[in-house]
Image (tube, helix red, strand yellow):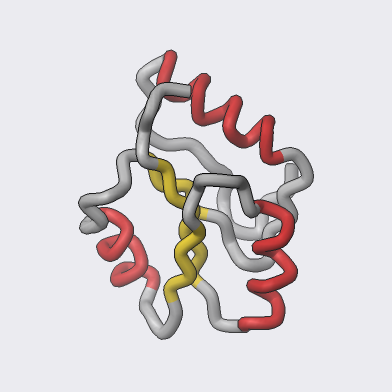
Length: 94
């Protein structure tokens, strides 16, 4: 992966749930940012206004990431194919 500044963001209301989830998606050298007490709009604007981030990965605090390498492979695929976003609807399952 090119030297992009990547951050993982989570809008969190429950510290215990966040701590469990963070253990599943923590990746060396990629900061995880927990944003609290924010509306969905404010959450998005805070991410967009982060001037120290080129690629933002949004992971809900109740998501279960079982293969972080595949997640980063998806980021590579998106970059190679000029995608600007991808994801699934809230409440979706894969």
